[in-house]
Amino acid sequence: MEVHLVSESLKFMVLGMGIVFVFLYILVLLMRLQAIIIERYFPERLPEGASAPTGESEEEERARVAAIVAAILEYRKTQTEGR
Image (cartoon, rainbow, N blue to C red; front, side):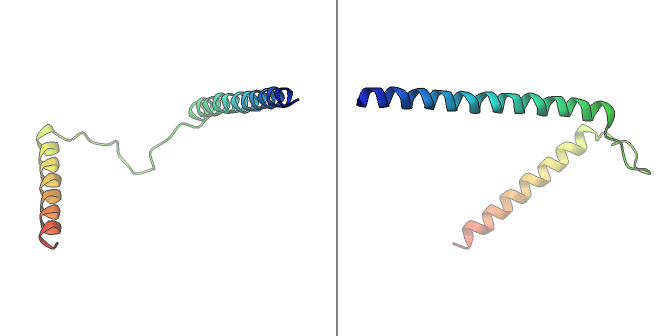
């Protein structure tokens, strides 16, 4: 009797997990389809008066990264001194 109950519970578990898996798979497919439809019929536009983003030179980018790194190091230095 107990073996029969265990096998039945395993069947229900596999059936339930299968249904959930199929539902989630269909949900992912529908979300991808929705993204494709939205991108095609409602493309993202720049606000009026805004120009296209200008590319920064490599030197400006390196200077910005260096400033960020210096700020982080200074912050960490002040935090460890306070302890």
